[in-house]
Image (cartoon, rainbow, N blue to C red; front, side, top):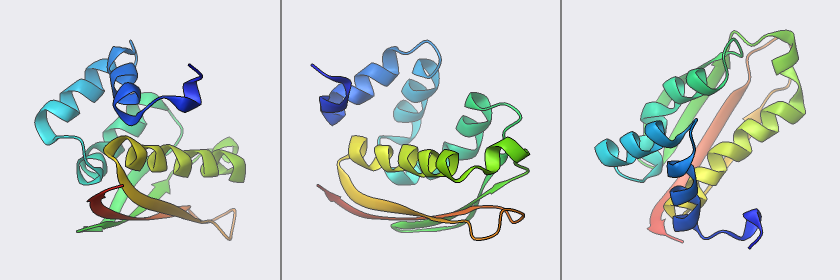
Length: 126
């Protein structure tokens, strides 16, 4: 089975077995459950643990089904649009694992400003 064709539950299982992410993923699911709101709660610490010295995620606004996040203190290498699109895609993968419809839009018009991510999701299973 190709990696891209894993079912959402298989992806969560796979992450849970990962040496890097396993303890964190399993702890978050145990405490908060598997949902995008829980991901918003833990995203700043998860990003910092995974990407040292590559910026700091801040959740600026969070309410039912929506979140606005900022990636501050990025080094010059982290201001690459392709990298930021991958970061947004990583958050969208959480929607897939949670079986909800959602999307993340990247706001990054000026390379000297901090990128913002606008996430929105529907709480019903996809």
